[in-house]
Structure formats: structure tokens, C-alpha cells
Length: 521
Image (cartoon, rainbow, N blue to C red):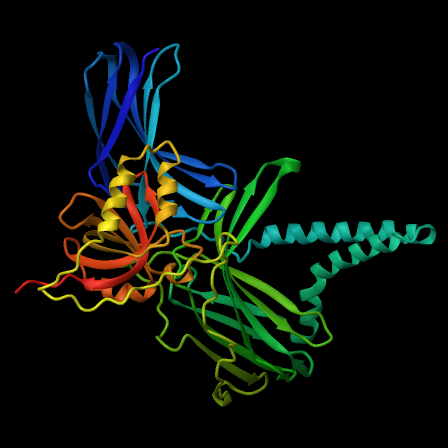
């Protein structure tokens, strides 16, 4: 059987491309004996992996060779294609989305030799917006679900009544049926007091850290007191594994923030209540995506708490999207505090000119964004920044000798054994200084164990005076310092070793930026 040796080399060492950008590289191929192949094919695809069912898509295919491949000869086949505009690379808890270039040699009546390697696709202004249904939550689908629940509840009650006469467990059937009917009729009962409640949000495709406007209005039918209005901002991964009777849905909460307003609010019959609230979105990079059996979903949930009466509940989805720099922006909201609510109560009989809106302060219990759930139950490692005096030209900062020695050992270790993992574990307690030349900065993906680093950036480059690649995760507090540095400049950082990246053959640290290296006069 013939053996093929593959190597795929990209034009960029970090293999990171924006959506829609040209990806270029070379496939290098050698065989141990001459074979006559149908073709050599290069394919670009994305696919999901994690707890959900596999979903994939192919967006580029090119036959780069047909006919004989001669023994001992090295072939080089250049390729070029446009990176997919969606979905983007994502590393999460239950869901991961990755892009690959695959090379395959099609041999008749034999198993095709193949090889694939990963590259990264980042969102760009050219990326399309995630599609949202025209009607919130899909009214048609919601009505079908409610109808099924009502029918099921009625059946449970009907079955439970005769069973109660003979067997006590008939009460269980009746209780389940009553609960299902209550879920369907809850908002109907709530609106008997509140009147028709209208809930809207804008824009439908906001970006991280933008303000999302929530509008809620109703005209009470009777006097009373409203305990409060609760708005919940939530984002989660939702994946499905299996099918049929073995179908299981797994969810992971990415973000949840509850805000409370209108506490002990007095309802006046016929006096319309118009409530508006600006909610600041988190600095998350878990953009909305809807793939088969795999999605990232964001929504605003509203709950009107009515004392001694069924509460009114509803929600509106929105698509968290990348900032669309250079393109037409959604209607912007004025820059104000993180939370600011406007409440206007108007009389149904008063003319428009007599309406006098009043402004109330936000009653949000907290505007602090909650921490993500830790990926495991182990204690979180703490990054301890060493005290470093300002380096001077007479004593410039230098990379730790221990770090250089460790990298040398990791490079020489067998990648298919656990030798590298053992070396990393042995050195995870130490703090190392690295002087590196910056090649690229990107926002950090997939950090669950250290909240301070989720909105920070990862700097990739090479150690000064060497060709050794390195990357370091920096906290959000260092973002402003990084804004003043560019590709080709040199920076100093200190941190702990977290892993060795086999894909890029580089050491990865997590720590803090000390500063740029001093410039010689």
C-alpha cells in the first residue's frame, strides 16, 4: 500500500484570517512509490465538535493534480480561496466551531490517503448578520406548542378524574394537566389585569458593549400594585445530541444578568404605562450562530410580578453580532449610563399635549456583569504579577533563562507522548518573564476558568533575538496598554505557563503586561 506524506503550509504563521479574506498556502506531497491517482483534491470546510451532533459545511474544492505521482519526488501545489463569511471559529463549553483545509489523494480501489489541518476564521465587517425570524420567537411555532400543551393538559385532567374515584394517584394526573394548562393560560390571565402587554427591543442585531433598548407598554384594566418588573439578559450555548427517543439537549449559560424595575408600582385603570430601558450588553465574543443542532442564542426575558395573581412572562431574541465598522450601523442609542429607564404614565382620556413623561432612576440591583461558570470544579489558578522596576537602558529586560530552557525541552519532546504535559505540570508554579516581538493581537477565545481574561487579548509573536513562537493571554485591564502597540514592536510580559500548542509549536502563557521594552537613545 502506498504511503503519502502531507504538509500544508499557510502564508501566515498564525493561520488567522478574517471572514471573506483570501487564504493562500501550499500543499507539499511525497509518496513512497509511484501511484496513478484520479486526482489530488484540496478542500476547505468548517465543522462543529463538542457535545452536540456533528454539523459541517464545505465551501471550497480544487483539484490540483491528476495522473501519476512519482516515487521520491516532492510535489508542491499552491491553493487560494476565500475564507467563509460564516460561521466563525469559536471555542466554547459545549460547542466548538473550527475550519480545516483537507488534502486527499483519490486512488481507485484503495483507501484514499488524506490529511487535514486547522486554521482560524475571525469575524469581519463583511460577515452577514445572523437571520432572525420576522415574528418574535416564531409565533406560529409557539402557537403549535401551546396547542399541544393545552391538549395534553386536558387529556391528563380527563384521565385523572375517573382514576381519582378509585385510585388516589389520579390526583397526580390532574395536577400535571392543570399545570400544563396554567402555562398556556398564564399570560392570558395576567392580561385580565394588565391589559394587552407589548414588548419590543431594538436594534435586532446589536454588538457587544452596545446599548439594547427595551420597550414595554400596557394599559391596566384595574387598579392594583405591581411588585416589580424583571428584565433578564441571557446568552447560552444550546446543542442537541442523538435523535429520536435518544435526543438530548445540552445547554451552557454564557451570561445572565437580572435587572429589577418598577418596585411597588401603583397601577391606575386606563392610565397607559410606557416603559423604556437601555441595557448594556457584555463584552462577549460568543456571537449568535444558528446551525443544525448547534447554536448560540441571546435573548431578553421580561417578567411582570403581580401579587396574588399569575405573572406575565415573555422574551425577545436578538442576534449578537460583530461591530460592523465601515458599514451602515443600526440606529444608534445615545451614550448614557449603563442602565437608564424612562417611564411614562399617560391618561387614556387626556389629549397628547397634556402628557407629561417622568423619568425615574434605574432600580437595577447591580450593573456588574456576572462571571461565567467555571469549566471545571478545580480551584482557579491565580496570576501573581511580580514587582518589576522600570527597566533602564543600562539594564534592559530579558527573557527568563528558565523559560528558554523549558521551551528547548518542550521542542525536543515527543509530541505523541505525555512528555510535554509532564513538563508543563512541573513548571506551572513559576512566573516567567518574556520579551517578545509582536506579530498579532486577537481577542481571547474559550477562557472559562479566569473571568479577568475573558474580555482580554492574546498577543502572539516571537521571543526577541530568536525564532521561537510564543503567545500570552492578557487580562482586560491591559487592553488600553495594548492599543498603543503594533505589529513589529516589542513588549515585556510575565506570567505562568498554561500549555504547549502543538498546532503552532509555541508556548502559551497567561499573565500581565509589564510594558514595552525601553528604547535606546
